[in-house]
Length: 523
Image (cartoon, rainbow, N blue to C red; front, side):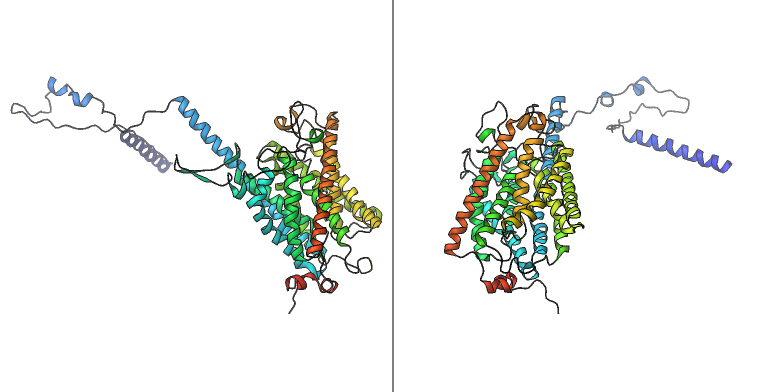
């Protein structure tokens, strides 16, 4: 106990000494001045008292040191608040931009490896590389088109029908040196989003949309013809349609009491029900009809060669779709969270519904059915993801699983077309269903009040019928544009280049006949 007491006493003394040293070290240093000794000065003795002169402080000892000429004046409260606001604004921009760049990467991830694996697993093994090549090549081709003139056609100018040369060759999009400040300026699409980020995000949509069409003509289209077809299709179909829907064009939504170009009040399409899925799905159907069936289709069994690829690809699509839909808010906020949630719910319901239909009709649920169902659920929620609540999203996903299952089985068999990988059955039918159901379930409880609702009823669930007319008009216009333009492009290419490989090349497989490679070499 005595040892502990001694130890405690030593610690106390150490603390007191440290505190005293710190207090002394913080005192301002004062200049010391030595006074010369006078001849009459008498050395002080132990009993002597100081004289008055000795006890009177000199002026130098009492005056405060003069302030440094370089010291800055303290900021006013207003200046401090302004600095704080600037910092908060910069942090907000950084947060929103980080989310949007991540979303851009997620959407690109959907094309490859997502769609590349999903599609390549569904074809025969002699065509696995041809499908992957289509996806990876389109990632390069469509990026070049988008950067040079596509983005400008889709988002340039104010003409309601087509863009202009405002952003041609990235003019007004890329960073540019400000000669007055000597620093580069970043053009902004919105207060929180750089133009470059918006261009990249939208460019990923431009990549995956034509890649979806490849599912209809898989295993039989010439690669060279595919390249030219996609250049023309992206320019003639996608860019104008994107401009019509997302750049205040003839299909853009017009809020109550506002003026706009939208036919029948325009349509709500949060992430691409019309622009991406209906356009690609309808074009896929036209491709299947114009090109005809694969050799031996209907007489020879053509099962998927690698279901593991397909399931993994479907899972990647599910993950990537969060960037596709939630990223379409173009910000990281509450509405993005809502879009993320309904996307997930619809995919889950779609997977269960499609597999459930197989279970009831065929006695067994298949993994292909579950994978196809989740994609159908994702497709149907795409146009509605920023406008509906989670429980309606479950209903929409379930409806997509059932309707798309019937389209890929009953409808396809009834009309006898060879949509190789069911691009129309999932994207065309699912996208159309989603656009219509958006008119039913879009609600003021979710919609952006500034851009859409003003806090007033939006869709049928709110008791408002007007939106449905705009949705139906957008569906009809998209169907007509995609079908007519695709048909004309295919006929021109068929007359000039030819659409299909020869029968011998098709039997050999596109991997070897078009690319001189094989997907599986076992040695």
